[in-house]
Length: 163
Length: 133
Image (tube, rainbow over all chains, first blue to last red; front, side):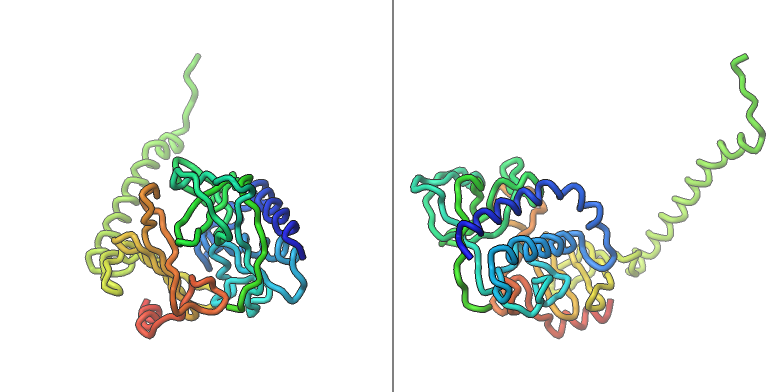
């Protein structure tokens, strides 16, 4: 396990979502047992666990669910190992010491150890849950939502209390 | 030259087809209006009733992995999704740049373990509503 690995893994995950999004959407929508939103979240979480979590963690370690998490195994937000509780989270740091541009609030700012919410697209001044996933939605220490370019940040793992 | 022979049956179909469709749609509209007036469910949609002190814009019932589930959209722009094992809620995104209709997930204090704060156990009232629909 290394921080370099999670940084690379999240970037590859963004590429994976960009390239597969339009292919999978017709397969995910209009399912009678769930909402479109939850079907999409289930698919994202399943891939997050299999592609990112299993690449960067040991077999008995678990990443915090991606974004809103899955709902297929409600009340759990996981797809694999639904009863497992998260042992690691992903935090976001600026790539350089210079400030980072927040395109959501249109300002430069400094931050450290922000909460990783999810990868997002950005259209007409607001973030979207659609490609191109080249932005990151984060929450800073004041719980303010910010959107920054994936090129301006680094992803790191942190150990979390089981929750 | 230039004139094709059109059989009588086909001619009748050409003229009667649209009329049939108009009549079908009018009858359908009438039945839907009648059911709405009586406050009954129209398909899976129920409008105008009050739940949790808020006016329902649309409510859709589905059968999910854990049994019956209901997704309720309220007139104030919020949304609630209830199934027998968890509840999720959304409010209109308060960011000034958020396009109208953009939702933000509610984070609960009494959340279910492993849900990142986004799911809580259903209340008795919510389970009762789920049973009723």
